[in-house]
Length: 193
Image 1 (tube, rainbow, N blue to C red):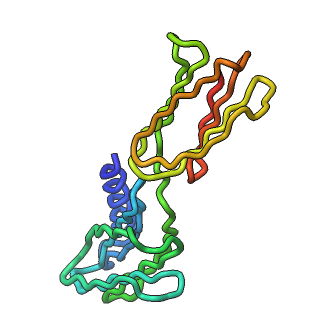
Image 2: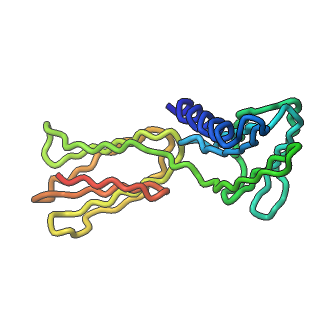
């Protein structure tokens, strides 16, 4: 699905470059930068007027050069840039070819690590609940449990490294209970029993 979106974006950029010029005019150059969803990778899509040397520069928010590459004999390309390990913030992608500079700004933000939170009431025992969290990265999970009148019954924070499970015994609580599970990025799941 990611590759399909990338190819569609590339086709749109190239089609726009081709349709905006007449028969006797040279083709227009184009630049697009597309984020790859769920990763720290951005794809640079370039279409030039002719085959020439192209210089690709990446600058951080302080205008400091963090990456540079010269590509020879390219009329067009799709180049992935991996921002893993760089500080979060705004970056400038600059392409310099025979026709001049083309500039795009991107905003590199942390990818949200999705966790799968599952809460279940165990049927074979009175008042026992099982919390399980499927997570690929280390995180901190905060669990808060409320009674039917929205009074806080329990609150704890656990460091999670990979998959995690915990059993809660609430047999002393009458009526309904609500679990609120929050990770360090602010993703919250609320389940009422």
